[in-house]
Image 1 (cartoon, rainbow, N blue to C red):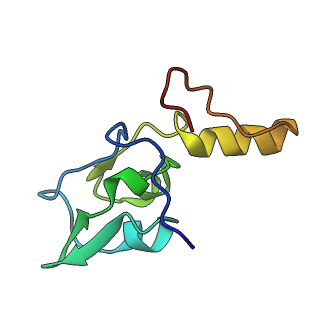
Image 2 (cartoon, rainbow, N blue to C red):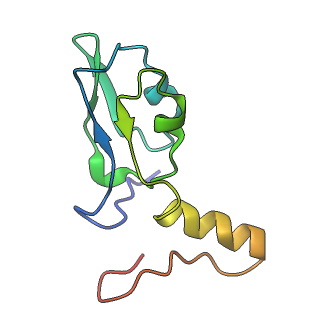
Length: 97
């Protein structure tokens, strides 16, 4: 599958590598391979690929990951499915999904 970048430089994803224990759960649950593990720590390597679904933060036992889930493209897709409408993240301006 082609790598999808949603909107460059707007993702709310953050990782505190000092808190990371290197468990690797973020790598397992991320649908877009945003994270990689090296030196026994997770690292964000494809930040713009993040769709802000929140799976990484929900599964991070040490609370090293934060993301404002429900505000990005994932929310638009899920809302479209639930409502039976076209997926839309309701972004505005010239940069839209």
